[in-house]
Length: 291
Image (tube, rainbow, N blue to C red; front, side):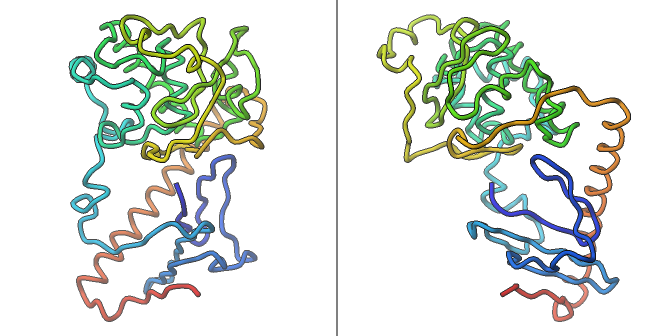
């Protein structure tokens, strides 16, 4: 992922913290690519330090690629469990590669795929079609639970449960989760953390793998899978050190949820206002690309 939208005076979700653009901050940011000011004084800016993002103004974004090519949202449009089980039975591809395919399910990135597979006790290289009904149901459940919790705490890693694989998968360092050894392989073109003792590779699929592929070796793949949301990384970040984990109190969760709702509401209002202005008189839109 690259780039983010800032609404002046409205908190925005960061991967590790919340922040708001105050009157003392540089506005718009020097990394701003697009700055928009509406007639009622509301201002927002799109920033991109890496300069990879593109911005387009569309009347119906969902009808245009790449949005139109995305599969159902893993959080808001989940498959029913029976539909999910039936779908997996027809996919002759490694399960992690399938989860990273945004045209199949959108919103699952690299660390998230590792986490849901770990919690469902499924090997990343297991063929999707070879999974038992029970394993498919366990995966369906873990996708729902992990994503809902991560969103609830605004992807704040310090608030992820202490038993999650997430806290032990960074830097490709030898480690254990809940007393079980973690190993690293490449699956779906991405560095993958898993626990062999709990995530067993079964059936014919295991016979196709050279012994070396079960070690901690990793490699780059030019045809990497599409990135999802909630903190996707190109490779395991050697410098990332997640904060100590603890479950958030109900009061903090409620506060964060309320803040999240305010961001969604503000974003919706911005979209509606821009659309009205554009339809009423396109020449009156006051938008400029930041230099």
